[in-house]
Amino acid sequence: MIQWPKTNDALGTVNRGNPCESGLCTLCRVDCAGKCETWLSSLKGRKLLYPRDYSFTTAGSSNTTHLGVSYNSLRINGYNYGATGLPKGLSNSEDECIFPNVSVEGEFGKIVKTKFRVPVMTGALGSTFVAAKYWESFAVGAALVGVPIVVGENVVGIDKQAEIRDGKIIKAPELDRRIETFMRYYDGYGAILVQMNVEDTRNGVAEYVIGKYGDKVIIELKWGQGAKCIGGEIQVNSLEYAQFLKKRGYVVDPDPTIPEVQEAFKSGSIKSIARHSRLGYTSLSSEARVRESFMKAVKYLRKIGYKRISLKTGSYGMEALAMAIKYASEAKLDLLTIDGSGGGTGMSPWNMMEAWGVPSVLLHAKAYEYAQILAKKGKSVVDMAFAGGLAREDHIFKALALGAPYTKLACMGRALMIPAYLGSNIQGVLDPAVKARVSGSWDKFPASVADLGTTAEELFAGYYDLQKKVGKDEMKNIPLGAVAFWTLADKLAAGIQQLMAGARRFTLKAISREDIFSANRETEKETGVPFITDFADDKARKILKS
Image 1 (cartoon, rainbow, N blue to C red):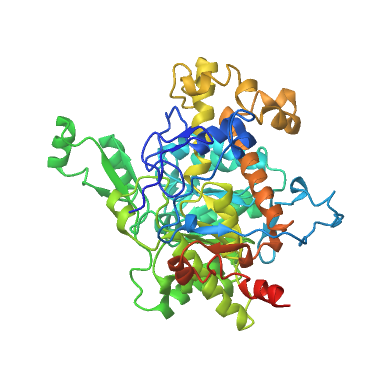
Image 2: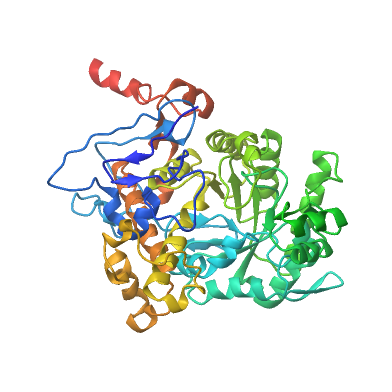
């Protein structure tokens, strides 16, 4: 098993817990005092692109992660001449082909195009209580940056204030809050997606959303995710709430209506109860029947008014991957998000996360291969987003290149949640009156923050840049979690620009599979990406022999 390093001396970052492939700790805490790379980037922004203590140090790469098959076993190619994909109005002169002129804006969708400013989107932030507590920071941050954000499954179903009569939603205050928070700062870039699972479909989420918000929202069908194979889950620590969820039709374990469970809960031997969603398509026994059911669902959604529809699928095997790509392409969906094993933003059975499904890089490599099969037959291929353990700008570039030209976005779960935690914790210290409202976890600044400053203006590298966008008067209404989101997004965007410039790609559409190569033979075999010294070796020999 590969052991990822806990510290990065060059950047001055430290993981509190055991780091995973993404560079995040396996267990990411909302009250964390730092300071992994993503955490510190949410404060210092672009500064984290470079080694620390400039003019006092030199730095050399410590990369020892080229073992096995993972995103870290792909390397980014660079070229020493030329420039491709120049944005309109840009010449190929050395004065204009500089990395700040690289465009990282893009779009996805078949008929209706959805624009974004940075090629990232959030993972599905659904019924987990973390998503609810920090939603304002997530949504305001995504809207201001101009990237898509996903309202995950079960938001209506677990809302005690929601009213559902005869399978029809009458009132859904939590879902409304989530949509309207994003729309408050939406300026035409990014989008809000609302995800549906079995329970959401039964509860009439699609009908409620289209009736109230029209085509402002993208509806997302959900097949699965990379963290678990049995559907969404949360834990509740209230017996009454668990009984409420059972009445709402959820699978609740252990059963809170059983006297023995009630006694165990009261005595304290059971302290929490899990709520589970249902598996989809269990009544169907063949691929043909799944296709029929899926197409019927899409047709219905279009009939009731949805212009934009997406699909989220998990780290199932190759048959399900092929089905997702083909069905989504045939149905002219706007986006297909493919989530590899290893990610996860909520409560998943731990050993299921460790042992289930197809790792991200393998799943994504096959997604490209299958998309190519359709393309070679002259078929239109759905736009895709790759998800599962992506956190840094190099991950984003590699994901876009691995799936090029079909992959438009990197879907990032935990990485884009960290700035919300950090900003909320800082806001709670600066203004104790709002600490509870913003879910701040700190009573005072830890040394990792205090060393950087004592005010929001000092702490966040992106503060004044964001203030320029919204205005000084409006800045007081922006949660600091959103300021941190903006700061991290700016660092990621600049990092992508630098990598793209090095590859001589000045727009996202110009990124290709030729911009990455494999760092070991096993990765080459599994991904189809050439080994480092094999790539362009024929061109090198031709030069030498000429």
